[in-house]
Amino acid sequence: MKCSKTASDLVELAAGFEPSRTFLTALELGVFTSLGQRERTSTELARALRSDAWATDRLLNALCALGLLRKRRGRFANGPLAAARLVEGRPGFMRGLLHQLEAWGHWSFNLARERATPRGSTPASPARDRARA
Image: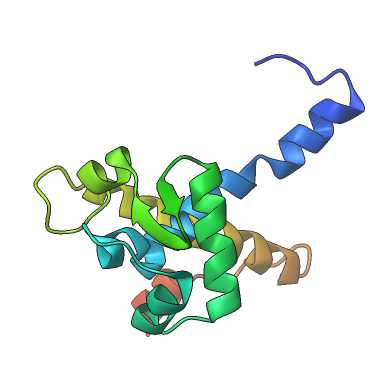
């Protein structure tokens, strides 16, 4: 890995999570599966996903920028890769990507737990605490 040399390298590093978080949020919400082979407006999809219409519209447009969805006349549809690999129930569905959702949560949980633990004490561990009970 190369050493960061400029301030813009740091900005790029800080923003690097955005495409991944956008993608994982869509996967977690079931955006690709809900679209399936259909075209839908962001309002229709928000209703189907029980999500906020404004936030859903932003998410769908971000997915277009990532090349995962396409938008035509205000309607969104899966792009070729999303249609082939991200629709649950299809033969090529990449179920293993769902593991990344857990990884994100574990990083966030473990870091928050470490910050909340006073120095010199042992952080709480749900698995360890269950084993002690």
